[in-house]
Length: 150
Image 1 (spheres, helix red, strand yellow):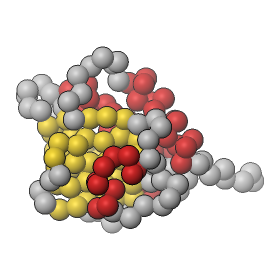
Image 2 (cartoon, helix red, strand yellow):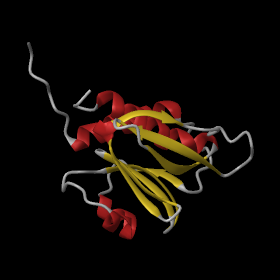
Image 3 (cartoon, one colour):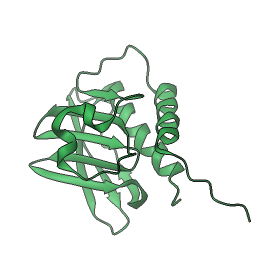
């Protein structure tokens, strides 16, 4: 049997950014959603103070509306503040998800999504609808697929 190769945080981010670029239409409107190919967590303002992270961990995507409504997907976890509760889900614990009506057909700017962890707990987050939703969705899907624990 071959050895399992663990990807660095930098390589995880590169793979996710490539997935985002394949599924996101450049020039589509993103009012609150961003993805990162060079930034560190500290570059996102004070949001990184709400959770613990490894020094090598990197941000990949975020939906930041306000200090009370945000989500950041890093190379190792999905973290956010939703209805005054900070939610933290390590990527290796994610088992399933529900993206809701993320396409924006209902003309709502946000959709509540759920990421379910291995113990069956559903963690709610809020993402921007329409094409911008592809950024956090494909980041999470890609990370779960390539996670070293899978």
